[in-house]
Image (cartoon, rainbow, N blue to C red):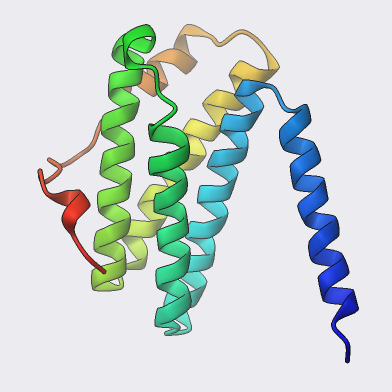
Length: 158
């Protein structure tokens, strides 16, 4: 009736997230960004299937924001070399695919992005848990966009 339970739960969840962020290593922070983008993308699929256009758009926008402002902007292209360049192109591709998924209401495009994010997340988890194997690094380098990304992808509107 007063909303204390929901508000309290939200405050508790937010505190847990903030505590996790403060205590996390840089690699764990990257994993957390992948988890957030995957979660938002999965929620977008649910809203697509329920024909909830507003919430679908919000979740896709959230996933794109995490990819662009969290993952892509954190790349150090000079220090990261070929891997950073590959990731940059892949993140641009993911954002473009999510934009197209939103415009055309195509679940399969969101599922494609979720698959890419999950693969990258598992590679970062391997880095967090141990030194990465050559196969882990090769997996990241091999991930390149399957199609060309239009030069104006960031100007597309929902």
